[in-house]
Length: 328
Image (cartoon, rainbow, N blue to C red; front, side, top):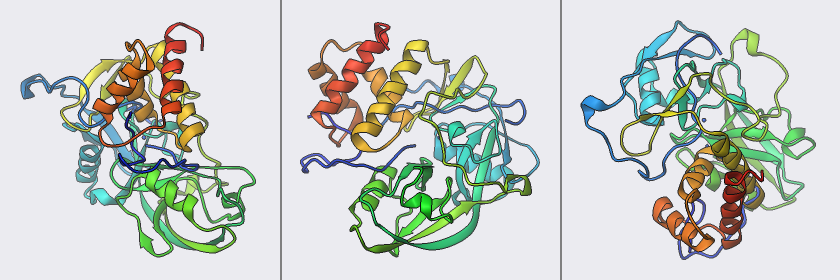
């Protein structure tokens, strides 16, 4: 059975409906869209051959410009930003690229363009809200920052959540009905929200990003589907890996961009999530596979102890083939 990140192996299949994963100012560095999972990818080069790149960063609500280098994954990146501004790393909710605004199209994910500028959004106002779950779906799309914080990436028009105006895109979900969920992955948070009983109230504790005065504007509905907005203008990217050092790579090809977008659409259709990092890894795994069974076995080896539905694996393999053959 192919494996994936929302269901433990040997457990019964579940169908998630709400969930999403997880990522301009001045010249600098940074665009994350795909990353290896569980150490997949190239072996670590010697320390003296690893890329030494300097990136520019600011706090999104306003700060001097800092310079950071020497990180290989998102947690290390947050630690470097925290060190530059003398704050603690857990204060950082998420980062955007080339804009200080809470723009879900510009989230930092798994690759940083070599000319992108990184803006860090830190913890701001805390709020608690009671919501009556009148529908099965709340209309929230959830992502996470790669370091233990799940937050709201999108709010569907006319949904239950849309009618609660205190809930905003970019809000970190800290507690559900008094249960602290810090450290819980986005797909698990989505499942918890889906499993809340209908026609009963529940409580969310949220933390919104700190805002500058010029950011106080009507709340956004969130990001468009991945792939509709390109991030970064640099000709190369720094690829961050969950294990091992970062590596400098060429920008994604047209095939990779189309395939990742289609796989991300399938993730949302089947699982209720959007996760460009996961989609990019699946494209990388499946680009040279000859049939769905071979692709499923490769996913099993690459993505560890979780299971994808068989029909999803088949459709993903087909989408990768369509992109490769120019049918998308």
